[in-house]
Length: 220
Image 1: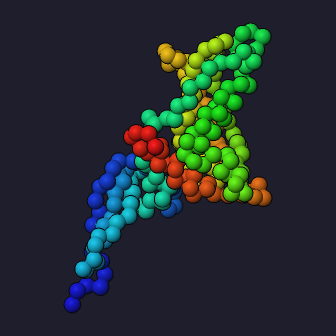
Image 2 (image 1 turned 180 degrees about the horizontal axis):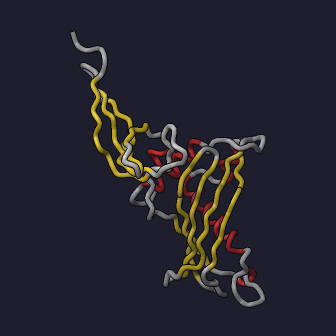
Image 3 (image 1 turned 120 degrees about the horizontal axis):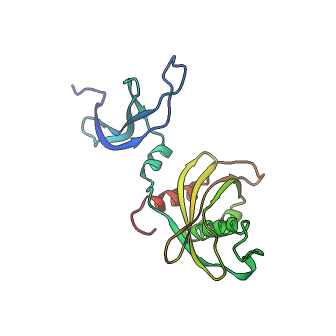
């Protein structure tokens, strides 16, 4: 008689960085490092099934196996070098009395690039409004390196860092063209809201399209 339970095997898939985790009885969190695995289940007469696991060890050498959440699986695929790029030109009305771009203007450059990205993916602000939902910027940090001047061409680069719960975490760079000199480095946290303007999980269609774009080697 065939065994009613499946047989299991664990197959290494890829290396990954793991967050801090505290073991039972531990007084403080310990960093983990490990390998992304896939557990394969074989049922008699059926095809293999699989789902990701994390085989990890902390600094004390303790080893454990953890089931990956869907978001962890998607984040592991995000490309660190994949940016959406939006080219722009400095306008006279954006200059301050010193002849350089006013500091407050850089936030609008970043917002414009993010909106261009969402339009390209088919999940623009207009689409969000049509579903009865909304989005809000909850935090944005800008670090300035060199100013932009009248008529200068530049590029705003946007990268998806991660999506977690109700939040989208994004990274931005502004560089001059054509020499690619760093102008600004910024991070932002965007929150998704429902029709009552209360935080809600990131809209599934938007999450899927963002992950797909920033995981691919080429354009979307």
